[in-house]
Image (cartoon, rainbow, N blue to C red):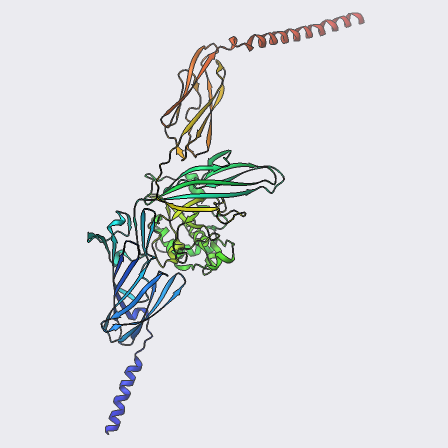
Length: 624
C-alpha cells in the first residue's frame, strides 16, 4: 500500500516536472528594463541594464536569456543576480553581438520574477568628430514582450549644449558635471536615441576626378562637384585645371565642364571644405511642379510602376492610404529596414547594382544601393518625391555603419516633405546598427557628393569613376570653421554707341569669383531712357568658377533720339555700369556711305532698266 502511494507521488512529481520546459515563446515571458548609458569624457559608454524577467505561464520556465546588442566593440561584459555572477557567452553576429546568459536559478511558476543586471562598456555609442559629439543608442532588441522600458543617458557637460535630441526626452537635468536625459517606453517604441552636441561639423576634402575621352572626336563633358544642400555648405579653394564653366542642374548639382580632345586623359583636382548642419537651412520648403513630376517617375533601378512594387506597397500602406507623406515615408522606411538584410560580401565581390525589384525578390543579398533603390521606388509609387544621394559617410566602425560604394562611398535616399523640405534618411545604417534612428534625424556623418533624382545613373560622384586610384577621395575632419563668400564680376556687353529707333540686344555676363555659390536675389538691371523689352531676367544660383549669360532686348522711342544713358547692374551690394551713347541713324559715319551706295544702286538700276527699254525700242524700229 505504502509502496503504491510512493510511486503515485513520484509519478505526479515527474509529470509536473516534465510539463515544464525551457523552450518558451516570446509571449510567455515579459521583461522590464531600466538602462543607464553613462558616457565619459573619452566617449566610452558604461551600460548598466537592470532587467526583470517575469514568467507569464505555469507551463514553462527559463534557464537562460538571449540578448542582441547593436555593438561590436564590447569590453568588461558581466551579468549578475542576487546570488552572484551569471554564466555568459558572447559571439559577434553580423553587425552586432549575441549574448547568452545562463541563470543560476530557474524562473518557475506563474508570476515568478527574476531581477538581474547586465553590464558592459563600448565605444560604439558616442563618437567625437571635430568639435561635436554624436550619441547613437540603438533600439532595444529582445524576443520577449516589454512591461516597461526606461533609459537614462548621462553625458559630460563638456560636450556642450545638445543641438538635437531624438526623441524628445521625458526629462532633462544637470548635476555633478553631467547632463541627464531620461526616456520611457512611450518615447522608444520605434527606435533608439540620437543626440548631437554641437551645431555643425567641418570636413576638408581633396577629390581627384579621372576623365578620359575614348572617342575619335572631341567631347564636352562634366564632373559633379559637392553641392550645397539643405544640410551642408561647400566652399572651393582650388579646381585644377579650371573648368570652362560651372553650371547648376535640376537636382542642384554643380557641374564643372571640360573639353577633351580625342583620346585625351585629364585629371581634375578639387580642393575645398564642407560644413554640415544639424538643422535644416530651409525656412520655406518648395518643390516646383515640373520637378515634382520628375521625382515621381519610374526609371531604371527605381521601378515605381512595377506590379510587384505596387502590390507590396499596398500591403505596407494598408489602412494608412490617407496618411501624411511623412507617415507613409516612415512605413515604407520601416519595411525596407526590417525586410532587407545587408550583405557585406556584395561590396567586395560585385559592383553590380540590382535595383528595387531585384532587391524586393532577393532581400538577403543587398548593399546600400538596394536599400536606397527600394525606398525610392516605394516612395515614388506612393506619390512621395524621392531621390538618391551619393557621397562620403564618416564611420568609426564599418561593421555597424558600412561604406558600400567601392569601399569608399555610401548611398542613402531622401524624400520631400511639404513642411520640412528634403529629408535625408539611411535605411542601411538603421539595419546594420540594430535600430539606431536614422529616419527622424540624420547625423552629421553624411557628406553629399552628388544628387541623383532626374536620373538614377548620373551624375557620377567623385570616387566612382572607372579610372579611380586609391587616395582619389580624401576627406578629413577639420577643427577650423569657414565663411563662404561669393564675389560677383559683371560684364555688360553692348557697343559704346547704338543707333536710335532700331531694336537691338546686348548680353550681361555674371561670373562668381568667390569660393562659395550664391543666389544673387538682389540682382537688377536699370536704364534711364533706353527701353528694356525683357527686364525680368532671373539669375539663379551661380557656383564658384561659374558664370551665367543673360540676354536683353532694347530700343529707343524714335529714330532721331540723341542722348547718353547708363546701363546699371546692382548685385551682391555692388554696382556695375556702362555708359552708352545713343545717336540718330543719320549721324553715324557709315550712314553717308551707305546712303551713297543706296542712291548709286538705285540710279544704276534705273539706268539699266532705261537702257534696256531704249535698246528694245531701237530694235523694234529697225524691224519696221
